[in-house]
Length: 287
Image (cartoon, rainbow, N blue to C red; front, side, top):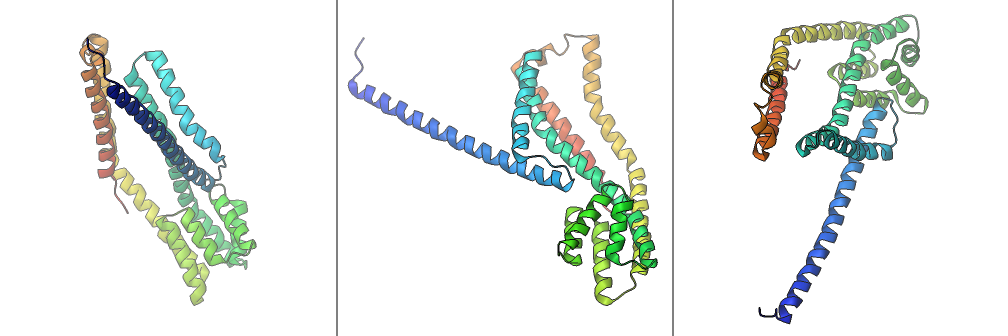
């Protein structure tokens, strides 16, 4: 066996050094990008929670986003001893907080819009009783429940700190962005500029928003069939899997024990989720 020339050893040495430097700086760059992405994500989440009057520190959120999916992944692997199930659990752990915050924010906005009609009626009654618009807002913040009382109370605090009513209303509209809130703020600002009768404006707003809410409820009722189809079709695959698994436990062994079969199962789950989302999108009607 011939000896390896020194030149080859030198080439190997420099190659190892180059790979080590590349790995070192590459890993550091990836870690920095990962940390930046998590910090940005935590900051956006903290802002959304603050809009819902839920105050959580940004550092704690960034730890939650990183630690919880990893812990869930290790727990899933320790329980099932299957790496692909652990990966699914980790992916769910990353997506679940975003989905939960979106659901909480959506429910809060729906409740705000529902309360808006009653709030406008209270304001209209206060204006007829001789109170100013700002005083009427204070009555709403005291009499109504959250989230309307929270948002109107914040609006009152901004006005007391020197913010103009127009700017405070625009901030409220930005926080609780909806067609109903845009309609309310626009009507108030136009009435104040043109000197219109605010009591008539609020009476018309109550009637308009109430009709819009009734129309939305009607649309929800008419699109109920599409939503039920979405749920039923999405459950057919898992139910079929469970029933066949109970009748013949070895029927899906070739899919569960083979790497290619596991990949096909993951693809099937992903396509099932995409189909579920598409049915929801196509069954949604904008008003």
